[in-house]
Length: 434
Ligand code: 4AD
Ligand code: MG
Image (cartoon, rainbow, N blue to C red):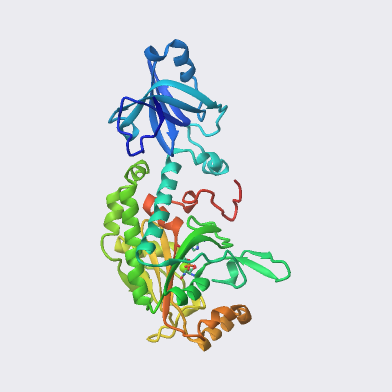
């Protein structure tokens, strides 16, 4: 009896019954007697053994000539083979063609980055891209698992918003009926803050938009951010949570994706050693002194750019929290540091291996007058924040939160140069298609 099965089913150990796999020709090679078909099914590349002796001359010839990305269904017996991907291969008995594929544009030869991005819809079928997006899927799942276990409530914040979330400089806006402009969310934070006053511990995880004009290897115009907000939480409590969160999700993903990391030639031990111990904390002021001691001409008050972030993480060999940045370079909602009013109670988590900032977080200003003053100083329209300001009127409490960019964390896990391969369809200043 024939059964439809894949090697990933619980009961898929080699058995004498026929199994069926459906997929696409990734490659086919061999000799005049036996051909090895690399079949992509369920995002994995599996081996199908085609023997002339068993199938006859004509069938063998037909299969041998199948072109890349032809889709087909194969039936045969599973056999263990340590050398085959996943340790299993299928010995073909019969097959049926489903869809032909002529002149598939992505061939095994080298292609330029631009060409590959123009063919992103097809490039997703390639081995490295399969591995990266599988790891992304595991990362998303681990993120949700972490917060679920910690009793955080998921709050889905809106994508169309009426108030500026971060800074007016990077807004996408669109006309919104008779109500003026709507903006694509730069963050879910302000909404998450309100929900934290209902559920105490909340998180959101979704697409986020920044009209970033920068063509760097870590900026997208659309990226996924996970944000958490906790009531009755200080900046220090917030840092402990971030530390546990980042190390835990990375360790989980590394444990669940050994074959994908191997394909990407990423040493899991390296990431595990970088995430074994709690990340060090330094103050912004100390970071500036360190950079100056390395010969950098940076002054207190300036933001720390990507190259300088790399100098800091290279020094520690792991991720590092940089705390208490100057107020003038951070967002309006951050709480002033009572010990040094020039600074705010915040931290960025900088990741190693050239990745840089993966988290921005802070304690929030909970005092009504202070936050109104900050909005005015930033020339933001106070009236569109009335709902946000209500939090500071009705039972205001200390609270803190953070946001982590998924693509940057994925770049760290996978050891990738650029975040554009870390999202299925990257959106950048110069790319909207496919
Ligand atoms: O530091 P950011 O701007 O912080 C916020 O949006 C806060 N409202 C978060 C919060 O406290 N709830 O962004 C957070 C993270 C960054 O550290 C970075 O990892 C990522 O989001 N990020 C980007 N990733 C890719 N492309 C971009 N253009 C990004 N901008 C920010
Ligand atoms: Mg930031």
